[in-house]
Length: 343
Image: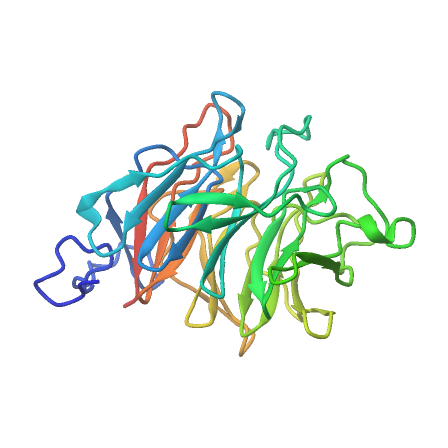
């Protein structure tokens, strides 16, 4: 990867140019740089940095009202080589979680159907493993308990799948159906191929499942931020899960600006929350949480409103991809790729 001054004119993350003048009224530091766009719109896609490749999988096709099987890659050293299509994903997926653990790339996706409604499932979802030699995906089987709207991270040699609701649309209670409660994380051991269930995450007084939360890992601890109930009410709290102790803790302070359909990336052990939607309209909010101190910071907002975008961190910068300016079916998905530079 080229990062030398004067020799990186094609690099996605070049040595940062001088900061542009602050826009009048803008108080938050940093700036965004637009780089070559995606060849197709990416709404509710998954993205990950794997080695020195940026890989994008799936998304929502509003014209067909279903997920996609699209897989794209970009060499992070030389952007002008553009995006390269890879063999299609085995199933159409919306909002898959792409997770790297022990040098292996996994994909996890919940039961697939309409993301605008709780319609009939089109795919059972599950987990997959990527083979970089042939650039194809191997199925590792379905989720042990079918759920929609899940998220996944890697922690302590396990793939941890959290959030979502039962595929049937019914809310299971811990006391009524302890093995099929959507508040319980599912932990997968790739070495044995076995699943186990963790303790149920805290919820509201109604025991509502948490759809589309932001889920990230920092220092082996899993943070769950935001999300919504099936009725559309926002969760404003921050939860911390310790997989080794199977213990949940509710953080003392809520998310300052809770949004629906936020995306997140971890950089320098801080959690960057990007965009989201407010009553269906995309937002530009860029808020940062430091788990070590419990403090929040605002940085320069996204160039344009974005909900259901994807985000990754790489070489000291953030990358935001795709999304949608508003959640109306008439609004096309974004093709844009923006890189955030720190001041």
